[in-house]
Length: 379
Figure 1 (cartoon, one colour):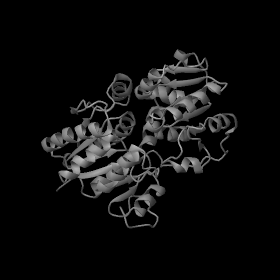
Figure 2 (tube, helix red, strand yellow):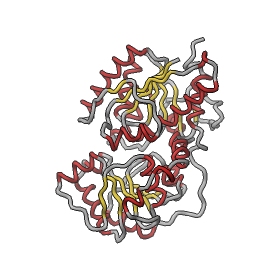
Figure 3 (cartoon, one colour):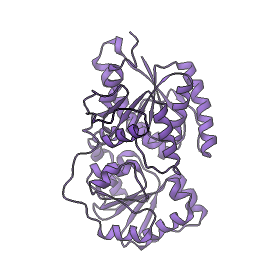
């Protein structure tokens, strides 16, 4: 029984690590007849030390069997090169299932390659929608969902989105007990699994606060990497102006994509904004956990902030993770300088903090569901 896991970007490494650990646990407990062979295919979408290699080490992800080395480039070129390379890998490996995560170009290329070869596709983080078709990620997730055989959703809202698009025809509540429509399952979020893993290790594996000479609650943490912000000079300038106007220290790990734009505009950070290189998973969790507040356009950080009970300001006009906004712990400001500044000064989350996106056992549910549906064994 063979799964080809397609990954290429930092958030996918975090998600895939949780599922790889669940596969290893399955293999430990099950007889040899149910053994899973995982073939990891790294597209190379994120390829440098700070965005790739360190995550494989820290999260104990098995080394990729295939490293395609595609690298960055325009969306069409990058996706096309990935599609061609993944297709060749799948023709050699002949997996029972291709497993894809999230909404990157690696996700779309993996799903397209598998669909054209008539290989079953399992999509983790299915059903998410921003309803903004100008986002490349929105196109990727919509197409991937419509190609996928099995859709693993983090919440009921994501299932409802699939119902509205006709991907599944069951609008009734689907419980998280694996008894559902033939192809859609609410499993929660595998990033919750990953955060539980990190929480047990971060204390002994990160000294980032000491290295940066900062203290808990004495700083804000910011990340900006979405194309809608980095590729739009007006939006990026507004965000940077808001950061400058904030009378607090802002720790700003700079994504390579963002650094290129900052260098291109000759950006010199004000005294309160500290640019640092991308950091590993344990370091970023340590920074998130101790921040007074997060400013981000990252989907993953919105959820991590919620689970860590840290207020989050999302620098976008919409979010796929609407539950965090409805719960009162996440606020959308877009790139509006006044809204950002006002939120930093006045945003206070409610005392109530409900459970969202499962209990940290999403990866186990995914593996169990694949076997229950005879997706992996052909006995």
